[in-house]
Amino acid sequence: MIPSIHKRGTKTVGLIRYLYGPGTHEEHIDPHLVAAFDPLTPDPGRDPDVTFGQLQRLLDQPVNALPAGRRPKKHVWHLSVRASPEDPILSDEDWAAIARRMVAATGIAPEGDEAACRWAAVRHADDHIHIIATLVRDDGRRPRLHNEARRAQAECRRIEADYGLRRVAPGDGTAAKRPTSAERRKAERQGRERTAREELRETVRRAVAGATSEEEFFDRLAAAGLLIRKRFAPSGDLLGYKVALPDDRNGEKERVFYAGSALAPDLSLPRIRERWTLPAEAASADGSGREQPVLPDVTGPAFARRRASAATWQALLIIDQGDDGAAAAQIAAAGEVLDALAKTSAAHTRAELREAAFAFERASRSHVKAVRGHDRALRQAARDLVHSGPALGRGEDGATTAMLIDMAFFLAIAAANWHAKKEHAQQAAAAQQAAEHLRAAYQAAAAHPMANLRQRGQRLAPRVRQRHAALVQQVLPELAERIRAEAGWAALAATLDDVRKAGHDPAVLLADAARRRELDTADSISDVLVWRLRRSAHHATGHQRSEQLPPSALTPETGAT
Image (cartoon, rainbow, N blue to C red; front, side, top):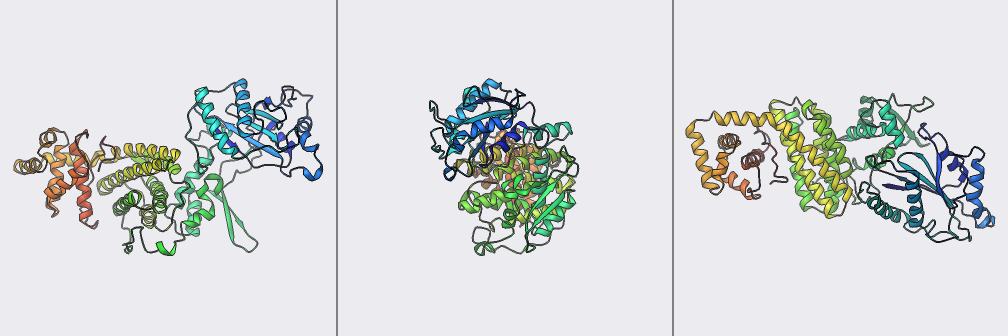
């Protein structure tokens, strides 16, 4: 259950007209009163003889009783309380009880206070109510509303428990605005998978992923088919923008535009510009103090994915070991990589990657300020992915896609752990949800490369397989028998052969792979070792060889390595 305290207003009758009116998109259905400060409060929604003015005068009476100089300029208080989409439809009696609890918790009308503020609760949709109150008590004093938003949130958590509703993680004010019930109904009528607000947010996030200038950003928006309105200052400086879907119109057949800030807090133009402005201390470093190398141009999807895997690995280290500002920047930029990966993914991974990016969007923001500049490598990786074009999902780019998705999975887990330590409940849950989608995408992406590895392993000469079996027995004597009995043993044998032919010492890399985390709990030790070995060999070759090793499958060993 989500409470939202809106900006205070000056005209009581204006808000009443909106609550009882048709809504901006004809979304208000059967507006009526469910509760009020006085049980005899007239209801313009159910009594045709009652006017909006009558209700307004009743609510405003304590305000108008004050001398003109003592009346607050903004005396209209407005709170909406919305249930989660999966919650059952509550009755008017339930919503009336919830309204009384909310005005008591926030200080508008404490329980038993006969001189409290006057208020009314209006319902015009199944899933929410609006509470309007005037901010002068019947005794002429002002209400005590300190921390009203926090108290409203706390009361909603208690209401969820009492009514058996979905338990919402405590918010921190950094979430994107949820689609309204009217927007969801409109999307259903139009046969859209998501609401216009959600589609626009996803499209704008993809457009900003890896972009390096306003011109490039707006060009991408236009190329995606969005309609754009720009807001300029008298000086000619660009102040902001709005976007709309070409076929999204309101009841007056006008196109519905959304400002970037209305899509998500980090999609306003000033916040987007922060990504392009590097602090002096971070302009040449990746957060570790090392100078960033000059990278060669991207030559194709496979190369872009290999380089993105390397950037993701470095981001993991910074999240685990860096300061909070650098870690927050890496997590925010990871969202750009996921957006770019979803945009350029092959058909068999596209749905899961899109869901992963959609979920991780919530994890990319918190009150920890991201120190921009430390995220250069990930933002460049996102740009590389976009400019390299879509992957075919087979051959080398299929294998490198699997490697990148696998690395992205571990990054999502690292982000979830980081947020959990900071007690960012919503962000941690979102990162974990993204990780589950990435797990599914990886399994689809890695199926073909792993099948090829198994076939190659089965074709190895008996003496070669025996040599690799002896190596495993030497390095991992306690696990060797189990490993050789697994279906993935052939893939591991092929990987050990590849490692040797690439000029590495298989014993050294195998021992290192086994040390990184215990293996007894893995469903398939072979699969875990294949992935670890191929990533180690990949790093050791400096990411420049054309015969890069394909990654292994992601196993149920969550967070392995």
